[in-house]
Image 1 (spheres, one colour):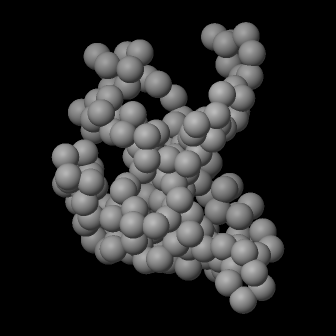
Image 2: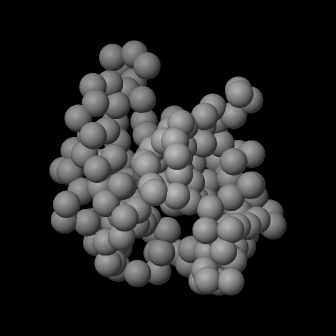
Image 3: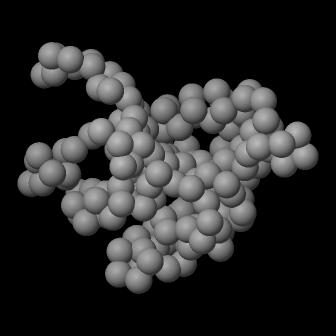
Length: 171
């Protein structure tokens, strides 16, 4: 982008609200890293009916856009109708990063989706009903995304590290 128009990136910061999980720690670190990137205007949003107060540990340079809305109802609408676009909820963006499995439809923003694990596929009997909805939402999100990211980590169950991320349409 040019000096007059920085790249506008919006993160789904819903995982920063409430009890902090591993995904919340990932989003916090991502927000801190991206807020320091030159030529980037970073904003964060949340899709929830919970308190919409700005997370205290969100860097001050990060804009905060939020409307109280039911994530469950949004996800149902996105799954069945592809509406409303993320820009209606979070404001204009060049890139929207869905940090927690579900990439909303957009009017013009390029999409990035992070898939943290596949428990919803591998162990459907132990995941919550909300995680069970990922069986439909994650493939839809991957089709919408320009980039699908999987945080790189090594576990005892895996013999090789994750590849990180993959741009759709490439191998």
